[in-house]
Image (cartoon, rainbow, N blue to C red; front, side):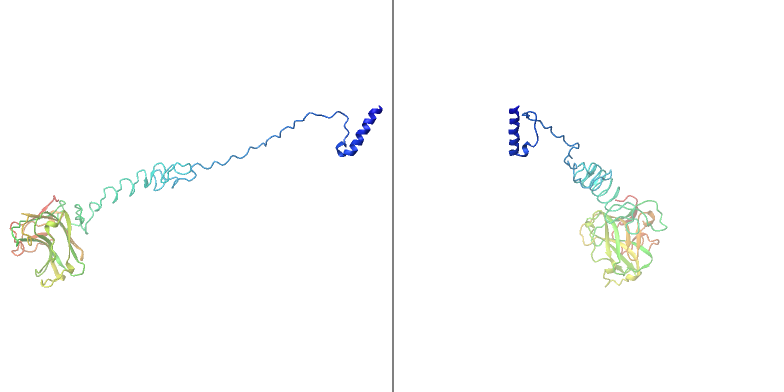
Length: 329
């Protein structure tokens, strides 16, 4: 008992020296084993996954387009990378399905279905039927009132030439005199030279006194290929020495002449589709039978039809013929 007290007394003295470390009385023996501390549980909410980004973040130019395609981007384009830089499914770089660089289905670089670079069939050439400047034959609209519209055709001029003095005149006698003196007044003939290795072809005018005026520069027959329009600025043509009165023109005609060539086609054959004047507006198409007089004569023929002048100073080529034909080149 005494020893136990002494031991306790010594312990209390030691605690007084050490301090707060022995403030609590320990009646039982000290634990020497390590105590395991449980690990804290993780949070109940998982972390936000890293943003993966939108697939095909940069869509192709255009996005959703029409089913038929568009200039940039067709259907199927947009987010997801389904389209290419220049168009999605069904489209192309320059137009969608059925499209083309210059027009839609059936289109062409110069016009739609059935179109051509020279215009549509049936369109008038110059306020009349007639042909285009360099194309095929056109419609017959604009035929002279009162003519017998039986078929579409043209005038055929046949001129045998055997010498430099040979020539032939074909004329239209106007119902009333026309003033062709204004600047820019032009006569146009639409012709097709079938046989013409030599000679010239030109438009001419005559006043009521039969004074004659033609162009100083005469188109060569051999230089004409296919259907062509021969224009003559009669308003600007010098009249000096001819005595002609441009303000009083009674006839408009066509001359086929052998000079200045030395060889010719026999016969020389020329088809004429129309003769027109811009100021005043006059139109003489030869698409019907009644627009051509097949009988050669030396006096004016009424009706503003094309006729052959058989006067001795007008036609010198023997065997010259004028006719109307339905089948033209």
